[in-house]
Image (cartoon, rainbow, N blue to C red; front, side):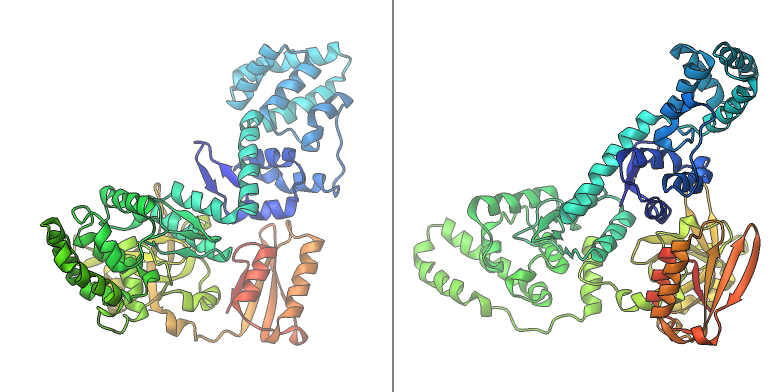
Length: 549
């Protein structure tokens, strides 16, 4: 997966659009990555299909003049970089490098008056090199068009180098790469949720904090990723350093009682103990979380008593007694039943801010692929006022009173990828108040509201996700962009349809320059509806190209 820098120099995981272009382009050298980063912007994005066709030999590459081949060969005859505009100005128009740089600025900033002055100069320079005026004009027009979107190649090269390096690390050291990525975004809750989900897709487990393994931040443990102690709420830096220092000097803690004896209880207080227990930091020591929560204070008090007695020179009297306690400490705690999975996850969320060992939505993951048409990681790719369906759990509700004294709500909906703010106006909030406060996963239908700072959703309907997944669908619709589809894509789609025979009707929606033609696949090509066919078909056709009805 390519890591691309945005214009502020902040590195981020690119969207599915970038992945789609990478798959279609099949880059095989660093120059392709440099070009792709320069192309992946609003203006030059229109050139992507032509660029790919030229690279793959489907469209012949031609040059107006032989002099241009050396300049444009690496970009398959397309003017893509600001440096190429400068080189053309020198090779065709006879510009010095200083003059060419001025031309680059004039064209890039659309300085019309200055461009009108430069044009005759360029034509005259071309004539001096015995280049026909008609050819010179053609080249000038192309320079004008592409200079408007031209990207600085040196910047693109720097980004491509880091892109290749990070892609290599992710491919060959996936756990280390994701641990570093998680640490770099440790204060961004939505990105942490997204990257944890990515880890699961890569079959890398993200493990809860462990008192004997965790460092401050995310680290690698046996091919998986271990949460750091700094992620646990109410556990301060002093407590973390005290635990890690004692562990590194004296070795791992052998039991919960051993931990209580060895740590500095002035820094590791009862609140720290409670958070560490609830997040699962002591799970590997053989006790249930509920056992420890209901008994840890008694263990601490006994430990403190022993320490006081040792400090008051009475240790010899109690030495034998302490040894007996050590030997029998495993049975000191009552054998209590563990909390149910819902409570365990709730406490994890309370202490870490995330679900680690599970998620309330995981049991609905396949069904979500059928019922929902977006998630929090993809909703920003939607247009304003688009109607979407998204599933999740309510992570927070903030009520507000309108001017008419009605109550509306701002609901934070969380899914496996992140969270989004959903606005419930008074009438809708009244109608679905019980579902929103019920604690169960839900499915929300609403319209996208793209604001200046972030994307929100304006809700119109809500239903329990458990009920929504039992909804019956009887047809599947594939939306195909005729301008982008290739023969390979058609073959891939045919193979997918053949692998998912079923009882539902299938339809191809052929989209071409604003028109839509619907083609029935017929009774001999009925299809089975599942999240798997949606995932496979969307990979070929693009996100949300496959819909059920």
